[in-house]
Image (cartoon, rainbow, N blue to C red; front, side, top):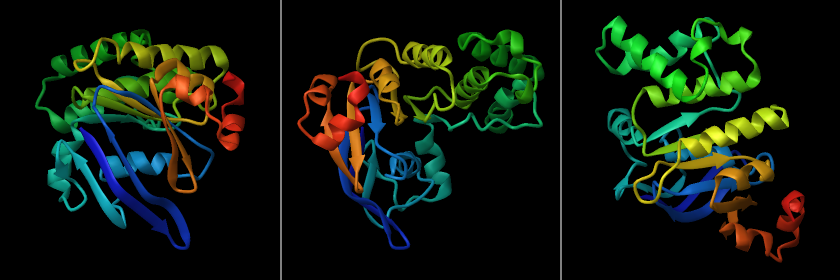
Amino acid sequence: MIEFQGVSLVYGKNVILNSVSFRAEFYERIAILGGSGVGKTTLLKLLLGLIRPDEGRILINGRDITGMTEKELREVRKNFSIVFQEGALFDSLSVKENVAFCLREFYNLSEEEIEERVRELLRKVGIEGAMHLMPEELSGGMQRRVAIARSLAACEPKMILYDEPTTGLDPLTADTICNLMKELSQGEPPERRGLIVVTHKVTDAVKVAERFMYLRNGTIAFDGDLEGLVSTEDEELRRFINEIL
């Protein structure tokens, strides 16, 4: 269970989040929508304890993470994996070494075991053949796939967090990434792995999510399912989702 209780965050004079509250289960598929600079990515960073709120509490399985030490947060973070915007691969490492990075960091595995696990993860995302390539040799879509494989390497997360995973991709490649996201979150609640995707691309959000939050002026202006989203009478939100109306 994830719970935000009156979470506020201010940068200088800019109110990023203003008393945000919501609850979510790990098996949910959630899209966080909104324009640039409204705090979408900030929510993910708060959820992982990468930044701390100025006010409010964030509970993971009933435990308040806002005052945790880095060591305590490391255990909490095992519930999640994150795919950063643009993939954020290590340019100087091959695909294999990018995915193996977390395996070397967190596990005492032999080189044979690492290679087997890397191949398994790359096979899962459909690019085992790119194992020995460098990031600069990959297309944007392939880089996102490597990033997803790397995010799965450290643990078996209950939920995957995606930060603008289809930004900069052509429609066909974006659709492929959306299909992969759904595949990694297949099954029925409560057993399935959930996801939270931060995006401004509404068409991609509806392909992968079942619950939608719309951020505006530091607050959650909408929180509901697709039926509620498309039938909203909020004029600003209707303009934002115009492409699916």
